[in-house]
Amino acid sequence: MGHEPVAGQVFSHRYLQHNPGFLQIATPNSLVGPWVDSDLHPSNHRLVMRTQQLVDLSGLAPRLAEIAPRPVTDDEILAYHSPDYLDRITALDAAGGGEAGDGALMGPGSLAIARLSAGGVIAAVDAVMAGPTRRVFANVRPPGHHAMRDRGMGYCILGNVAIAAHHARRVHGLSRVLVLDWDVHHGNGTQDAFIDDPGVLFVSVHQDDHYPAGWGAAGDVGVGEGTGYTVNLPLPAGSGNATYRAAFDRVVTPIVASYAPELIIVSAGQDASIRDSNGRMYLTVDSFRWMTQAVIDLADATAGGRLVVAQEGGYSESYGPYCTFAVIATLAGETGLIEDPIAARGFDRNTTSTQVNAAAEAALGAIVAAQRDYWPVLRG
Ligand SMILES: [Zn+2]
Image 1 (tube, rainbow, N blue to C red):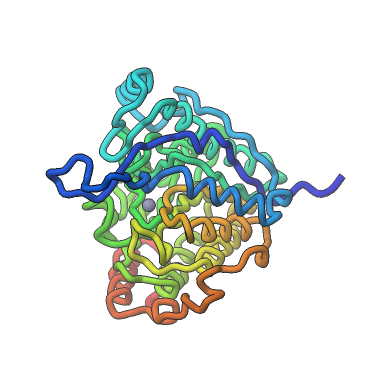
Image 2 (image 1 turned 180 degrees about the vertical axis):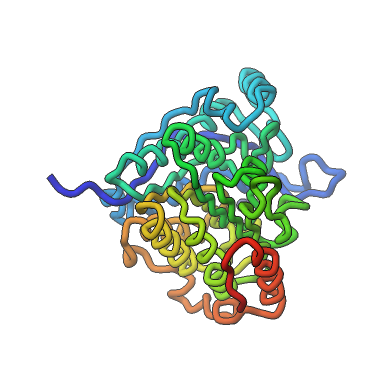
């Protein structure tokens, strides 16, 4: 008998069957756009599928424990979502699909797949709570962090991570759960789920003034008993590896270490990558490696190593899967299986990798100022 792998993965080919339809840039007066050949929806199946191909073809798969997803129950959905919303998406599903909310299209079978997506993150939580696997990547779709209590939103139908965090507290009795959201968009659904609740520390690193509009300002720090337990790091478009490193060093790492979570869940969208169509950041594979190592180190220091990383966004078919693969490989303690195709050609050598520019320095200053009353953050 060999040792059980320290890292695991949740995946199902069923995830690839969710079809969000078409979406393209078009003038407001045109329903179909000027094209004959439509674009694939940005949140199509290919990123998750290609990540899985890298895991399989690189030889990493045998190093990962396979964690089977299960569908979430109504009861688990209702820990976050409203009964009206569950009724509505159930009716939509029976009709073959439709719009669960702004930008959240359901195709045939999408509700069952969304249940398996949220249930995949729950299975990951159960696996790391039971051990010996301590770190699990949930390569799920559809994503979840934009889904609000009463409506779908932004490609998200069920709030996967919010549902899993509720599960961690209800079933495993945890009193301090960290959700770290590094998707380039703000995790509005997850923030809203725990806005007045100190039992879940929500930390979001995202592109400022992006999607969804009006969310994720540095001054949004939670309400009531949850004041101080929502931490927003809005970074200006054009931020790269150096700014993310500074944001972790000055804000994310000291806050998480101080909170001392019993479980870490990462909402991992790789849409802050340099080639992503839906973001304007400049991260390369290197950042996804060290950000993952940073949360591993924090989990080891405070949470008995318990770490779940759940797939959210990421839209560069050519580069996003390399970034996601780097996350999974780092969870498994592997660094050398696949090179960064951009770094190999020197394309990562730009000033965003080495310098925090003036706009980013100002943003970090505002973030530190907003958090200083609550946490031991560091000035630059
Ligand atoms: Zn995103």
